[in-house]
Image (cartoon, rainbow, N blue to C red; front, side, top):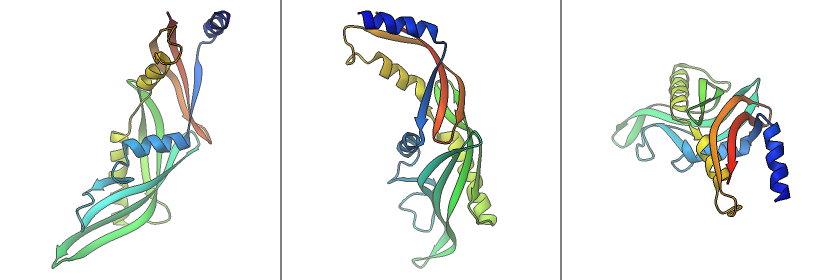
Length: 191
């Protein structure tokens, strides 16, 4: 009980907590929420559309200048099926996606998303990159507030001391060289 009292006294002195989400963990989150079709994120078609498809795979995340940088492999084709043969455009290249991490309504998201071919350009590549930027800005969400609530209120850890998490908010969010860094503020009541 003495340790609990010390922890509570120390917590009363702290106005914010820093959470660091390492990029390896963020890559797993991105893979589980966005790259859900055999490790791919289809932005056009699916695995069954042989001549008209586009997908990203193998995302790698870094931080640079306060932004997230996501590198992924793009493969796509925009062709017609003529007598069993695909006739049309197709390409494969590395795409570099830049985004500002945001926090809204309990979720980490991406804003100001840009995408460009890594060393390649052209009409097809520009169209593909624009579609990817819009898709990631719209689709990526990590519900941090819900996960924090589950973790801090988990009755299996310290079952004799029920907890209640309230007023969870992120006061700052940014990208460092090795992690997404969040300053969070919350009230945790131990009963």
